[in-house]
Length: 232
Length: 84
Image (cartoon, rainbow over all chains, first blue to last red; front, side):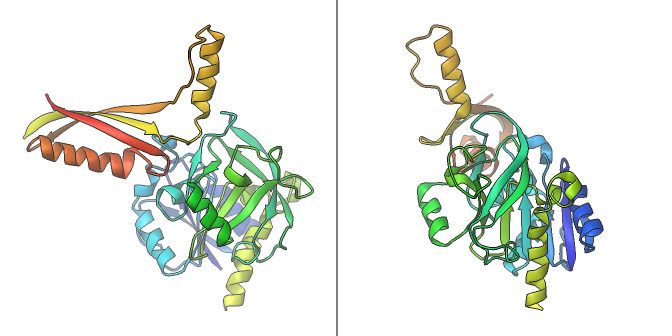
């Protein structure tokens, strides 16, 4: 399977994604500089975490105008798989490919910590290797992960089963206490209407090797690989 | 071409949680401003631009606000354009 990891000025998890896919999961991976417009020939594009354009104005607000985003939009419309992680999620929101916006964390503090996530929908290309209700341990690292959408959009997301991961405790219980950043409805990951673009605040590429505390992040990438195999 | 200056305010929509505003309000109370009842933060921009006339300058500023400066999901904007 061929992955493309898009590097914006200020991306800083691009090499972690590369490492996870190339060295750990033995997949084909290439970096794509944000000035490239052509993103054809990939099975899955990853918009990695970081601080594109220094988070100036709003997170992701400037990156959405990078030339590569034209290619990404086309790729999405043709049904290609796109995974946005952390800042990548924020960029996809600003670009209108995913709903909502990330407000600053309720605590006003940058949070870097392991969190537990409950898989709410396992029927997506990004979670098909998980069980419904399964609890994943994957770290977050962000200052703005406080997911917000208008009420009508939230209802729509719920109705269409598009909330994919929610912050929970170790046992999978969803509560105010298990919400690290104030995100509406404990939302950690959502998918687009077409079911081919996932945004998640937690960093699966940082939970790939047991020496770093968890290997649950592999399940996200392995799901993508599996969905591709099933598609043929 | 004439020169214009736009003064732009970006404000959070009502109902959007503003953690910074909340912290500032509690600081105001600590300072003894007992009358302070609410704080909402926002952004302010000044843009210098050249345009044929005021109405085309306004149109351009409107576009700038819509496309880049504000996120319509959570923010409103207002602007004032004057010739300099």
